[in-house]
Image 1 (spheres, rainbow, N blue to C red):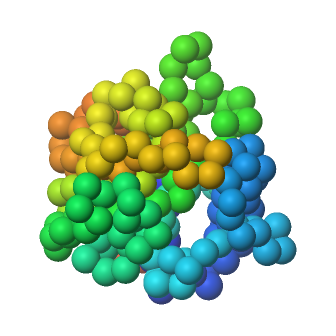
Image 2: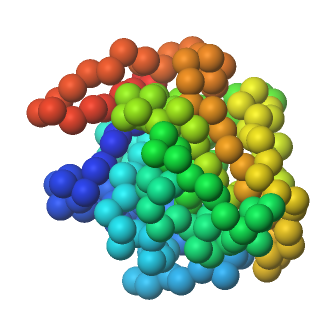
Length: 212
């Protein structure tokens, strides 16, 4: 399983993987979770995909997207502050330059490879490690996100607990919560799978990481 970073200058190069990512988001958020999201041509996307985010993808076999997350600087327009301000105690994120927002995190849990008895899916842990490693490498030490109570429990199981930024709020068919996560070496060591390749390797000036 490999972690791939797709910055705006690589969108065209990896358009097939990005198409899979939007399809995975549609399957998870629109299908399995039944959230109120916009699905067009089989893919889920929203206004924040137009802000040139960096995408973190987990791929299996180098060609199948099994996990994804969207990263945007927290000082710019963010989903948390613009779409879900009710999740913040004072309605404001009070963002600093060392904060990054992670949104639209999901994994393909139908993938049998990487599923262990009672353990979190390998794709989930690989994504966690990839997000933390990318954040540290790019000068961020805190990750902010809007999620739900189910995912908060997954973070706790992974040993990467979230510090809440407000009280849980019922939104649609879920109970949402906002919080911050540390992006530091201790957290990275805690969540990374045993076979995760933590040494950064560069291909054509771009960073890729993998878990065998």
